[in-house]
Image (cartoon, rainbow, N blue to C red):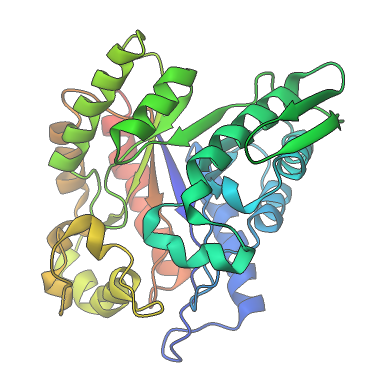
Length: 349
């Protein structure tokens, strides 16, 4: 089992936590350099748009900067929202990123979850078209990365002629995984194509997701069977939130409000994750599901990983890098604790 660190570049608009943007970006890239030194396998970057906290709307730019600031660690998208991009331009940008990074790119793709439907009007896109835009985007990009000569594509969403990509990615094939977090239909899409998969796991609360992960894995195995593929054919990527410290109670008291903001922030009157996780929206930090596990001792984290992944583990688990109200120095120390005290004990999973 491999471990990585996931960056969302959220810098709260609230004055108590906000850092000037140039300082914030600079500290984030310095943090990535330290994560590489700590021995993590990968870093990944996500994106959303029109968000008051920022949420990395310039993903191709920050990904390129991450590539330039590191030298050996894998870099990737977790995830890139395909409906918001022209597939040829996206294929070109990712190919160049793989070249300039020396073949270190992993590409995680998605169709934009329904929780973020408010982003579609910004781009003049009908959210009902998300599945076909992802499917056609996958077709076009994978063909562009490998086709030795120009090709045409005529689908429901894209009418393209003389598509030609140069340079090609260094990696052949370029590692691509597609998120299939919730629905049977999404899982069937990924398994049917034989792609690697992004799983439902800890997400923004919790290290592994516990029972949620186990239910996802059972459903994924069923999708593999429907596609007539072995259960273990794909690499599985997931992520969670856990900060390792010798004093979880003290850390929770210091960071509880920032973590509450990260989960519960209002965005155009919508609480993004409430519809996915619970029927009622938490009113205090202690109402959040799994809040007790956000800070753990090394021994607690090891025990949870061993227990929850006893019957099947993801290939790669990414930890959320940073939360509002947490300094980058504090985040680095929590990750150092994980790298030094937890990773060696669970790498075999």
